[in-house]
Image (cartoon, rainbow, N blue to C red; front, side, top):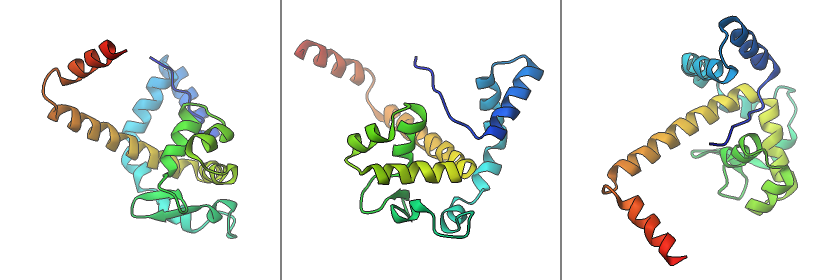
Length: 162
């Protein structure tokens, strides 16, 4: 299984390292436990307020390229959401240029998503945690509705077709 590497705010990295040392546990285990225990508090942090009111009080560079609607935060004029871009940036460690090419976006559009994350990391991490939990539940629900053995049959067909 691939190891996930996640850029976290310095304060959170320090807290995780401190707890890991105190408890003699792996930092990943400490982070997972901390996120589980604090998820509802993190979720209550208003992503919408962060989007509408940049910390500096002046329009941020990302506001030109990002939009918030009922589906979440996404690239203006495209059906690509913030979580799609950040999943590749934070977890797959793809560069801005690689992500832009993959999605057919400009470098500025991708950089706007990265800038938004960097300026609002706590809110965005809570947003991503909620999204990934929803996606995991959705995938499990879909899988539970499939007839037993369907995946294996389809994979066997794929192998014989090659």
